[in-house]
Length: 244
Image 1 (cartoon, rainbow, N blue to C red):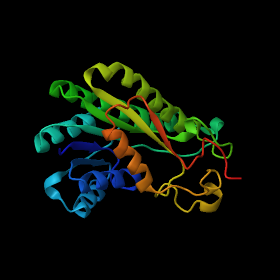
Image 2 (tube, one colour; image 1 turned 45 degrees about the horizontal axis):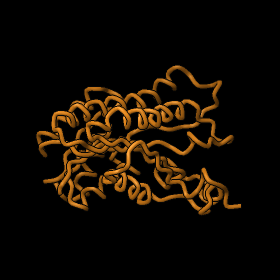
Image 3 (cartoon, rainbow, N blue to C red; image 1 turned 45 degrees about the vertical axis):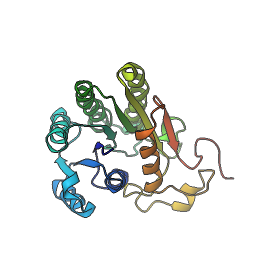
Image 4 (tube, one colour; image 1 turned 180 degrees about the vertical axis):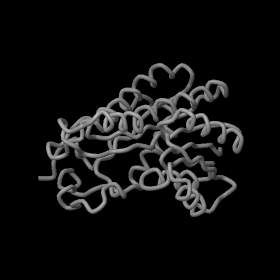
């Protein structure tokens, strides 16, 4: 059965690959990103205009969430899956973090996820057929790195993990499942020219991950009918041990 999927932050990296995978398996996808031109280009690259819609906008604004749902309903008749991928990440020593820094992470990561989920859940409830939500967190919530001071970003992502388990409990009776994927170090534009060998040695599998491996986990959780409240690490064993 064809599903309609909203993927936030889908103009590059992990989000773009998630959108690609849903389109390739025959689903309708609503793309979102702040750069309208880039979003249009990604939609064209997916090659199926009849099954792709775009909603440019900052996910930290509640109006963007409302527009995502409205476009999904107008173009495809409803919503079945939400992937909360949009977010920001960066490192900065704790004592140097400003109020503006913290607000940026809270808005882009936690507030954006919260209000997009709220808008989609309202639609799920009117459809009365349940739905699936997959959030993107990070394994750094469970195992921080001394050499990566990222308290502001991690506070906001920790909130995403908490939201996942809380909503899984609250919404289960309505047939709405809420899970999360917690990536480790993944080869994305955010990784940039980082030291791949050094980063890979942090994981049992002795390498960094690829976006397609994160996508596979998202697809699994989107469809896993008896799984909710689960935070799935996709980290090559980073939180389980070390390669040496």
